[in-house]
Length: 84
Image 1 (tube, rainbow, N blue to C red):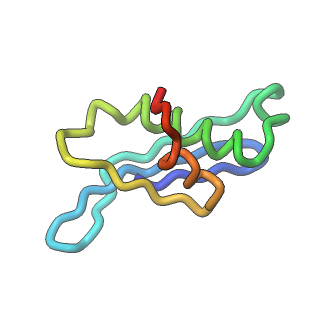
Image 2 (cartoon, helix red, strand yellow):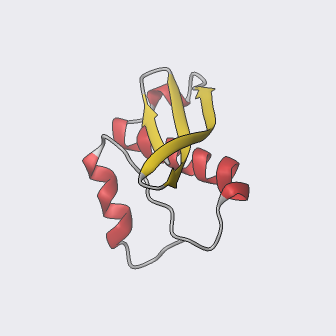
């Protein structure tokens, strides 16, 4: 899954890896409301990840999901002790 955000919207794409080639399965986007546009960059990126995970979770199986993002501060999520 790839996620990204801008000042006005968030977007995501779910991929399936077949023989080493990623094929898009589903695209998702959402325009941010006036309150969400005031979020910091890391909050917008995290919101995009949360929104995409909630919307696309029906496609997730038992295998781990690899997330691509161009925002490196989101890596702190992996090191959190509380996974809520």
